[in-house]
Structure formats: structure tokens, C-alpha cells
Image (cartoon, rainbow, N blue to C red; front, side):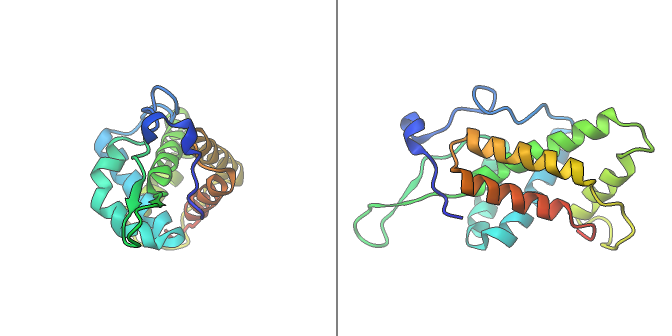
Length: 183
């Protein structure tokens, strides 16, 4: 991932709040559970796709999860002495994509009948949060649903100003994580 946002579209280097510019969908889960699921999913995606950002995410978890859809001002890297290098973190984009995915899946669960998807998604959430042992007995998230999650995640990243290649890489990593039955 190159982490190259289109910063010229952000006055003051900060993207507006999600309600103003980036629609992440309406929350369906209680706030504490949503934060826990988004955090666990972001952690898993970063561990796989951008492990160098994992400690930064963990240190700033509360801030990033509390404001999904916002991009903090890029930090100048002064390690080289010039201060010219801009460090762009992908974690805020992953948090936004994970939030949109969790809300999308939550909306499916809320609108589905008990026998359709609720058991599958409940099992997936428990596995993601490591509250249930990983095994191959749970039903995987259907391919059509994963495609819709991918579209949602990549769209959110693009709306936040991330370049297409990076938006697709984040969406791919997110869907890859969701597709694991033995989370």
C-alpha cells in the first residue's frame, strides 16, 4: 500500500466528519460492541496488510474508532532531518472501511429473518472477537455479500481521498479477513 491520499482535496489536511462527506451507514450495533468489532477487524486487517502501522493503531485506537471517516493531518517525519517526508497512515482508512463493513453487515442481520443470516453473522462476530473457538463449522459470508462489502469499503476509502489502488487493497484485505471461516 502506498498510502498516497489526495491531500489537495482536504482543506487544512483534515477530511470532514462522516456525516458531512463520507456515509459509513447508520449504526446498528450498540456503540460499545460496534467499537469492539471495528477495532478487532481493523487490528486483524492491519496485522495482515500493514503490520508497520499496527502499534500506531493500537496507541490511537480510541481516537480513530471514535471518529471513523476522518483523516488526521499527516505528520512530518523529521528522522531524516529535513522534515519534508510526510507520513500517511492507512489506519484511519481501514477503520472507516471496517466501520462501513460492520454497519452494512449489521443492517443485513437486522433485516434478515432468524434462519437466514443471523446465526452466521453472530458466529462470525464471536470468532472475530475471539469469544468462540475457530473451526470450520460456521457458514462463510456469502460471496455476493462479500462483493457488496468490498464495494462499500473501497467507496468509503475513495470518498476519504485515498487513491484507487490503496482503496482496493484495503477493501481486498478487509474482505479477505471476513471470508475466513476460522477467524
